[in-house]
Amino acid sequence: MTVREITSCLEQWAPLAYAEDFDNVGLLVGDLDQKIERALIAHDAIETVIDEAIKEKCNLIICFHPIIFQGLKRITSSTYVERAVAKAIKNDIAIYALHTALDVQLYGVNKGLADALQLSKRKVLVPAKGSLLKLNTYVPHAHLKTVQEALFAAGAGALGNYAECSFSSEGAGSFVPLEGSTAYVGKKGERHIEPETKLQVVLPKHYKNKVLSALQLAHPYETVAYELSVLENIRTDLGMGCLGQLPKPMGEQDFLEGLKNILDTPTLRYSGFLGKKIERVALLGGSGSFAIDAAKHQNADVFITADLKYHDFFKGENTILLIDAGHYESEQFTKKIILEFLSKNFANFAFISSKTDTNPVHYF
Image: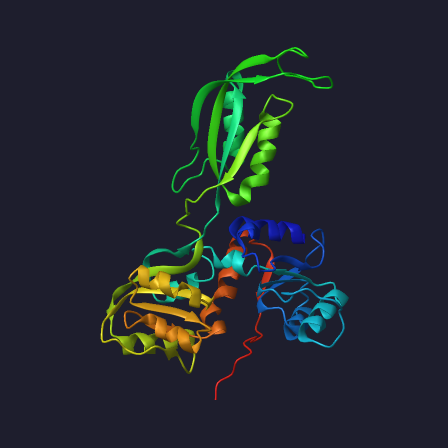
């Protein structure tokens, strides 16, 4: 097994194209063609996790948080990041990080907590923008079906619960083949009018290169005319956070006590009881203060996230219960989710869940 085989599968599940611009995801250390014997699934690839990988004879670490987040100007032993990276390189251990590429998947980071809360009717809390593209191209009538089928096979035409969606309109294209051209139709130096079909398809952003390659291969013209634009339309299956329904309404105190048990945490920070039942739950693992307004707009009774600042707790405006569950605590199910996905797709390969507790926060 190679790093490429494993990470290619991961990127079908959590395409890197949807990671946030500030993030640093993908292969951080190692070579895609590196042979892998065993892989360790971890939350963070800190030095103690590298030690665990060495002990377990794992030469790939698949982690949630990227150990290299900002640029490294040197690799010495002066910081925890440099020590971890240096030790991984010295021991031929590759490191691959998912982070926000997995955050935006409806059944990604938030799945574990949503499952534990038994949430139903789940949907994305903050839908991703700019995740859909529209392709316009112009095809001679006789080749329409061939080009259309090639685009569909490459992933174009997917829209919600529908596949192979497209729109066609008839027209005429004109061009003059110049010296050096190898024209499909027409004579050099003469304007040619060709009956054409304008073909329009929508495609997920991460299929862009694959779809354009398929267009070039299937189209009969030497130079293919096309337009590609970003749509304002949103995908309901892609974005930050999760919104769902509890099996039955719960009192606020009972809900907090149940959440503490699920997360196995000694404390929760919250904005104060409002004296109403909890039924509609919004959650966003990790730092999620930016989604408070979205949770309110979606009429959630409670919003569970982490890293809320003092003034963030005022933003509930006495309409929603805000809970800061802790950064690690709110994301702690991620290892299990990654392990389950990989074990399902590579039944005969050894994936090991890290036993190292990488939570840097302790409670007294």
